[in-house]
Each structure stands twice: as C-alpha cells, then as structure tokens.
Length: 226
Image (cartoon, rainbow, N blue to C red):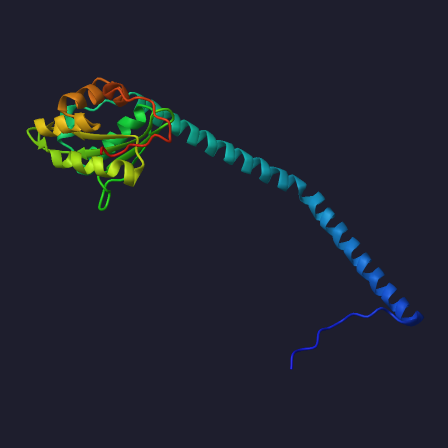
C-alpha cells in the first residue's frame, strides 16, 4: 500500500484557532529576529565586505587590462609579421601550417589550423567578412620539390562539399608542375609557389591581394566544376 499523504486541515474551534495563532506569531517573531541578526551582522561586517568588493573589482580590472594588452601585443606582432623563405625551408609540416595561419591572421582573416589525420585536404581554414571562406592546403617540401596535379584534384573535390569554402588555395615553399598550375588556373584552385610565398610572407602583400580574390556572398559557395 502506498503511503498516506499528509493533509493539513483547518483549525476547529477556539482552542485550535488560538494555538495556530500563537504558532504563527512565534514563527513571525523568529523570522524578524533572524532578519535583524542578519542585518546586524552585515552592518558590523560592511567595512570588510567593502574591502573585499574593492579588491575583487581591482583584480578583475587588472586581469581585463592584462588580457587587453596581451591581445594588443599579439596584434602588433602579427601586423609586422615577416617570414623569410629560409625560415620556411627550415620548418616541419606542422610549423609550416602554423605560419600560414599566422600570415592569414595578419591579413585580416579569422584563421585556424585544422591539418592532421582526416583533414580532407584542408590544413588551414579562414573566414573573412567580405571575402568568404578560404581553404588552404599546405605542401611543405624541399626547395626543389614540385607539387603535382593530384593535390589540385583533391583540394577541388573537398573545398566546397566538405568545408563550404568560397576559395581554395594550395601553398608550397617549392614549385608546381606545369600541369598542376594549368589545371588549377582552369578549375579555380589558386596556387602560391615559392615566388608567391616570398611576396606574401617577406614583402607583406596580403594573400587576397596577391591572388586577387573577389568578394563572395555567403550563399555563393565554392563549387566543383562540371
């Protein structure tokens, strides 16, 4: 059997009404005394509370200023970022991808590195208010190394469907084969070879200016050629 629910009934008769009134009065008095005690404690402790609030506020302001100054230093560092070809050549694959991300941030893009296992031909993805989204495939190689057409095919096939990108770019510190460059030009896959990398990273030309990227509305996504 289930437990019986406890139900309160209305007082019956004068004795019960009087008892209920006494209990209610006692509860009211107790509540008032507790409130008065709490107010008294706060009154006595207000100097300590004030000092605590002032210290907490000062700590919060200090942390905010510290973060703001850190962001400003980072912005100034990136605005003046220059990377030489010799520095690129000495990097490994991961460092190369991070450097490309930093250069895009310098140019006003919101960039993040995504390269790794299962990246679907995207090492860096960047967004721009007016230029849309760009997907970069970074190919770090030896100075004499060449990037072939297969990289172009892969980037073209995933830029739109997998990453919803408006622009696809392949960047290398080496060069491209003639077929790869021609195929990229024909199918809208931008490429940056060693000479273009010098102009972008050393000379400070923004990538979108180097590639002459056009503004794209967000509905006009990178599409595969028929």
